[in-house]
Image (tube, rainbow, N blue to C red; front, side, top):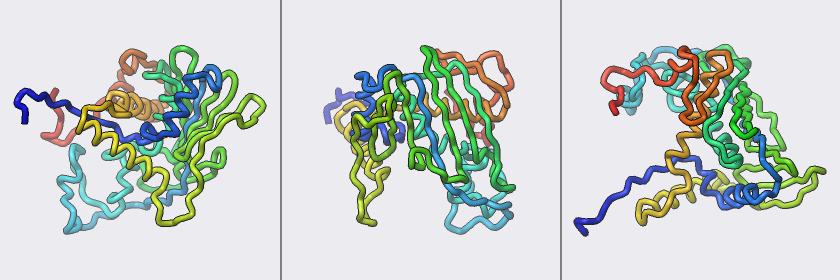
Length: 293
């Protein structure tokens, strides 16, 4: 190997819609003015998640390294309703639906509008469906306002699967001359009379063994990452861009926890004039796990 060859760090965020040829085409169409000036996007996710109940302390399974699994989180006894998926709903480890599936849909909204950090964030919602150990909202409406007269709304319904636009998840982008609806299968553009003017949607797949739309996009995203490692080609979602989307999701949670509107510095994403809200900027770490920079 050439001793003078320089290595390049390649890091990509796992929001695989950025590697979808149809999504790339859709966002370019928005850039080219197909719906006029885009100003508002609504992202949503709807599911029928069941209650997680009230966990009971039980012995750690023999095939689980629970000490390692807990990672940087403060230690707590093992319970039977956390692993493998329910950890998403505990603040010790997880971030709720907005930072789970919401990350993907909100990222599409931010990408389509061409926005970075907001100037104002609000949230309403709660845990409405069950009385159990779930610590986040199961229903949330978060709103993000940006400079230049643009905004994003997130609607998360973890326990009510009623669809929006006949879709369980997706993003709508409204502009001055039309509207675009996007999901993992493609996009449809409507004019101001709700007439379809353009669409590119994947045909239905009747083979039950065929990979899902998300699985196909994941394969494309991984291939893009591998190409970046091998050749230095640009990745579709560099970590710096992904971090901006993640921050939106965290700000939505913080607005929900504080119960008030957050003013945000559009240059840094930091919360302004609210020390109590800014206290959520960093998590509590187990001893020895706090990162040093």
